[in-house]
Image (tube, rainbow, N blue to C red; front, side, top):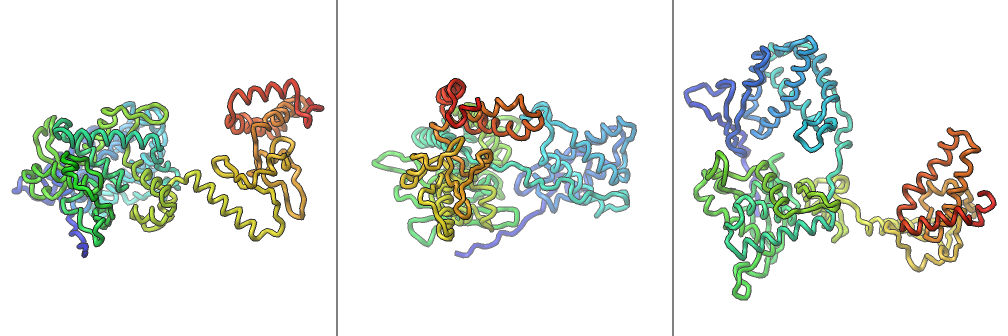
Length: 553
């Protein structure tokens, strides 16, 4: 099947009188008609405060000239981000230096703005109130004003200061500092799927209008995201012909488009063998991606016949049920989708593993899909192909969390490779799995205390030339250290032995040598065992120390 490359339409028409010139901004407020996001309103009136008409006019002209090369949503994001720059100008004015013209913005001003961003905190009406701005937020604010000023340097160079330059990289390693998107845990994912199943059952077994139309769209949106791992925007731009036949009879192809690069991606989905309309004479819940997609198309079909022709081919359409736009037929946007997803979570009282309200985010659905697919296939290449990534490294670095089984299997392979090429091999050597399990055939040496140390057990105490490691102080930094429940008495006897040395050593020597060992026992080893067993071992070690340390306590 030939997939034609879609024609890129970046033209944004102005919603002003046709008699006015179209290459000049009409006034301080105007509306542009974006082909992907509809009418978007821009207001530059508030930027004229403190005699800043000239600089506000330059910013307005920049937005007007960028309307043919940038998406309307991108321009709106720029406008929201440069408000921080206007707050900086207000603070700069209070310090005795007012900036009212564009040619007053030079490298010194840009450096002062970057310093000002470092001191700012999150607004009081947001989640992380009082905390400093994240690196991503600072970079977004800086990139927005940089884009606007670059536009002015290109199209109106006489109005820009000749000393305006930009630092090469004010936020080094910003991508590495951003937190990895964590998938939902198995319990959280199960709660989400249960909520979706309840809504699907309610929609298919009763009147579809028993739920608000926005909630019905959100249910199908979350179902498609969970089943395909697609991002939010490609799903919102699904068209009625996105589901097509597959060369195999039991499969279907779901085509999605990514506007960044205008690439088309085909996802092979299972074709249901059961007709969803009737099963034993009753209406059935769709069981495949194709059935869900067809049900969504049927739900929005009446709206597609009434909406503007340029939007009629899309699937996620709805009639606004409240507010100033009530009864208006529009496409579902990112903002409305996020609002509906938040209402979905509240309606089902979804909780995370800590008992707090669960915040649903498309940024976590995709890694959840990737991690689950890797758990079932154990093939990172299949996961990368399913996500549409160009390289496996991107998938492994940003989307897939290794399971304990994968870590254990990796340990088995590594130990097997070492055993193949090492000349001397200990028969009792064991492989410790990530979840704490050890193969039964290799545990004999440990259970017979053949590898006991002064503090616990060792997985492999042998070194080169058949020597045996006796440096038990370094055990707490060694990956071969093992601690069983029976070792707690000996371990805490050693613990109190170190405490007894505290009064005999200089404080700096104690903090450098012994304190890290005690901290590791308290913070990392003891929490791995039942608290009552730990308390019993501590008491026994104080009253009757282990023979290895009895003469010293």
